[in-house]
Length: 506
Image (tube, helix red, strand yellow):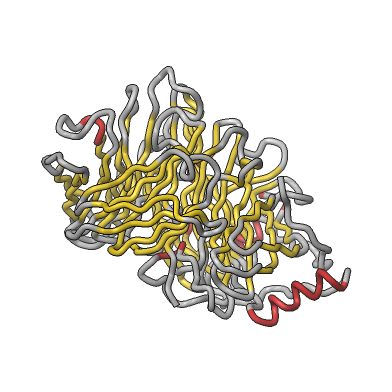
């Protein structure tokens, strides 16, 4: 597998034990992070210095824009950064990461990669930086774990321009999963579809890539009520470091958990890693949190096949009860919406595959609308008992639509991130009231693969040459759409799936 190469800057490891982190509860003001010294080979240092001169240490940016925390910055942006977390390296790792860098511009883009490792009670270490290069209209795969000690990892990619999108694949003994990385930090994050039931393990990764310490409060919403562990109130996430917490230490035997992260000071990025090891529910899912709640959430493709079970997990971190309406969007079929009450600071699960009026064996899009604007929605898919692994997976919904999307594949031709990994289909859902004209093109070369029209409140599911396989795609539409790719190997559609990355405009 291709990897970034370069000569280290010689930064000394930054050590901070879990006990020290907990001792530094909020109360002390933010402090500056450490600065690495510079040594080593001139060619690599020149690349790093060029990027640093423009981008430097990622600042705490303003609140994420309407396209959320996964938007691909415009090509003419002065600089851009991406942040990935949730995986680990070394013996016993639940999920090892491979990161995909996709360049939507017509020129090569150079950047630097910084890896931080949380080793639990042994403290944290920040690895020397490495250069990364992404070819024009191409994709590079990097392994953040190269040369790193065992532990949980987080990675920052910094570029001296925009136009690059970043996603990750995590793989381990329980299966594999895909997720966008984050293109911005935030003072708040929301997650759903967690669980600490028998056979389930949930971890929360809080990564602070900025130069200022952050202090966060973490709240869990469960079917049994609100849980606010004292150890997670005023939890310090030092500048440039990663804090990983096992949710089951304080929230035990809960079948459904939603997570709310609120920063008292500073900004972070939040990822959730969920693992199931109780057959037939074997699988993993890494979810990037949403920096916003919303009134409308989209799942562009849902398919129940071979006894699979599809469940929507609705969370309402607001103080007022919400009423969620679940609509099916599919051509030529009228389906009665399902209305679900969601209590304030509460959760609700809906087994949509158990709804008698919903389609069986055919793909459909799901739209979830709320009455208060405080919803967070995720989806889990449990394959049938005889399905191939992984049999379980999860994904966050998309709280917006866009006219442009980057859809990264789980690898590049000839080099899958996981053995046999490939895109099986691409879904394009039109949640609007007007027909939209859609063009799907290959990132490499920009050649149009197909052009089609998608009627209002409907979807198109594409597969075949140019779509299926390991092709990174660009989707452009005349009206805002939502997109989702489905990947194999998996036990059922939706087990390994991921939304695209919206393209921001300059």
